[in-house]
Image (cartoon, rainbow, N blue to C red; front, side, top):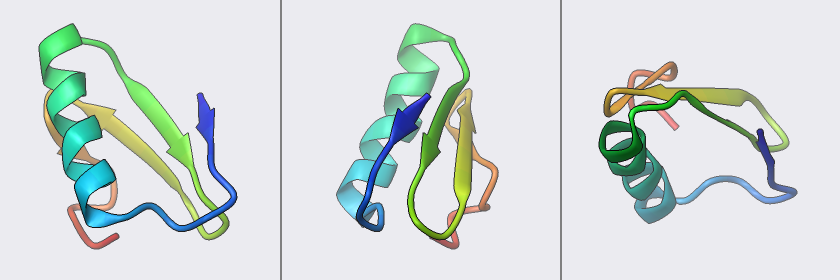
Length: 49
């Protein structure tokens, strides 16, 4: 789990999506507004960050 006190930017969002595919794990990121679950280059927010 990664906690961030700022909103996630588009570049970070895309990088984490790619990392979730490469390392084949679920990555969970939290910013002040929501939780993002990344798995196999997909995000729970459907890219509406």
